[in-house]
Length: 40
Image 1 (tube, rainbow, N blue to C red):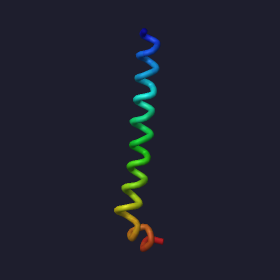
Image 2 (image 1 turned 30 degrees about the vertical axis):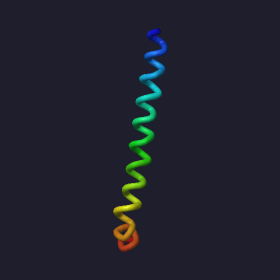
Image 3 (image 1 turned 60 degrees about the vertical axis):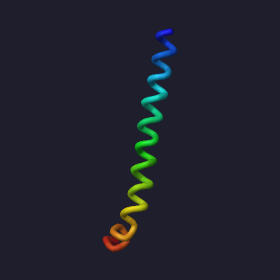
């Protein structure tokens, strides 16, 4: 039982981090496309 809970926690944390990275990259593309072009 404990092993199952640990696996669930690990997959949950992994999903959280994964979605956080995706959300950050998507938000950066949506809200900062002009700034990056002007800087370059």
